[in-house]
Image (cartoon, rainbow, N blue to C red; front, top):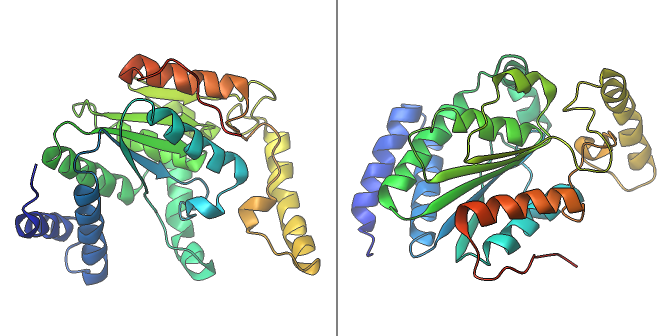
Length: 268
């Protein structure tokens, strides 16, 4: 199908103005994102959208190893089903200033599930689905990214071509979570119980209280790390190499999409 780029740009810009009003920077970002995705997804079978955990702004190459392994493992599995485009959806900007600015809205989402960016992603997904009819869309999210994906899915019940793989949802979001046949929710890595999913406050609080000390230690050692890398909560990791994690994801993909090959996909 040939893309009428000018018409697509006009429609994308109109949607952006509905979402962001007179905010020129956000309108331009939304318009460019939609144009880029709709252009590159033409002729693809799948669109994979990764919602990063934490602040939601970490590019794939800088993700924690286990979260990156999940994105790569799902991508490799989907490749057995057809062609795909992988992209990321950043909820926030990067840097201390943006984190400070966005702290209140992150807390509001954590405690009450309210997040304006959910409405934005819902509108953009509907736009993509409208313009690429046979595209299957899969959201990939871990931790806060899983919560964001589920909040989006709760508003997309009628959009049957969108699916979600969610790992390690934080316990405050559990009462709001909705799981349908198009959602895979994994709350345990099959090795160690996840304290963040199962409300083990002792381990969870310890992980966050000791994180600043690790952050300072790494900096003193001359090898600074992101603060999120310093949060050590055993069980709140879903490495693709864990058999139970990999099995559930592959079964979900096979059930919903089938595969060109029945061979399980592993990463070396």
